[in-house]
Image 1 (cartoon, each protein chain N blue to C red):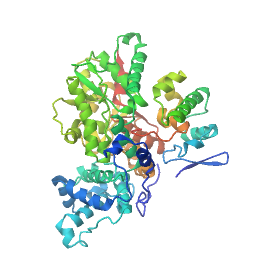
Image 2: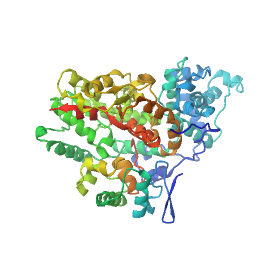
Image 3: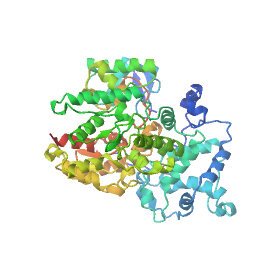
Length: 106
Length: 471
């Protein structure tokens, strides 16, 4: 099982790099996950807006939000989401927000 | 490119049965658990006996032929990407995987195994651990791509044996957690990502409004429940939940072609995890929802968006699972695109897609669906530099994410190891774009490209056609 070392903590990941224990998430973990994922130079304010929205939605509903809500809440276009997170909303944005792997064909 | 390393033993054999989601589903009093459509694991459930009883009830003539016809010639070994990337490891061969159900069949139902069990290696599972081990083999070491089936001189359908065995285990709740979760969502909500009706309509409206910002598309509609249309369009829930770009591309092309089309309000999910889990009841439930929607809307035909297992389950297998008369024709959207191009209902400029592009045949569309030429015809119309991949068509290698494997993260390391053969095949094309007509293949191939550090982008047919449009 892969792990991620962040500021002295060991974070367990699943085989696809999603967090095994989403409650361990914090911003430092998101930065480390972004480095591991690749394709993102630095997490900027737009990245954080999307990540924080997804995180909040997940804590309230225990599931990943629709990409429509990610876009409409943060003011990002769909195209821009893919520019911010090259792996896409599920495998990119949701992963960085510390969500477990979404179910289904993703 | 990574080196292939032979393994001594099957690397997934020891994975335990994860039941966290099952316990939660029982605790949540889900209707599908209560009325036993969705099965959960019961440690005191006398599972070995149930497994053997079910095997005897469900076995049919074509499965029995596949069980007795194997002569262990080994031809399947050279067909399988797991076996090719693990030389010397017999547990990675199709024949080994099929033998795990074959030996149980022989012990219980075939005369050879009753009289000379040691000769035919007949044996029955002794415990739930044995059943769990069987689960790891049939779910974790086979993508059900059917390449071995096509190349078997005896006609042994190993992938059908794998699906059959998956179905027996699903009845006992002995399934990977990912498969359980998706089955739960399908039973509970009618679609595999638990998309609500409001979210479905909201996303369609969003895409419509987005497209209308183009002044040339100001009259564009994404119609829902419009009766008497030429076709009813059906999609993969991920197109709603995570990536509606493909819906926008399709809607734009349909609009420019002057199509009369509609989406249904329910029964729009053309994917079907019953196919992966081997649960014909779930398969029939999902397929029936879709067929009935087409009848309700009096649609001229059913058009299936770019999805491999969705195409196979909706166009072929679903009618059997649902015991439903096939009286409305169905087709892949790629065939619809071919019609538009042929009848010049849309205009394209192929120089807009100038990068070298190759085509990856989805197993469920080419090998199991018989459709190989239409996508090539379309790509040659909309791309200026098309290059064939070898082998191709019905002999193509799996994206390695088939058979539901993308939803089972626990088997991912073995899957990516086995993808070395796919990576070499992709690299040899020299293409920059890999086009495929399956969402699952998009993700499977993206994993391969990333893992083996190939400089390639994965695209779909709709995307390339939309990019080439002149309007």
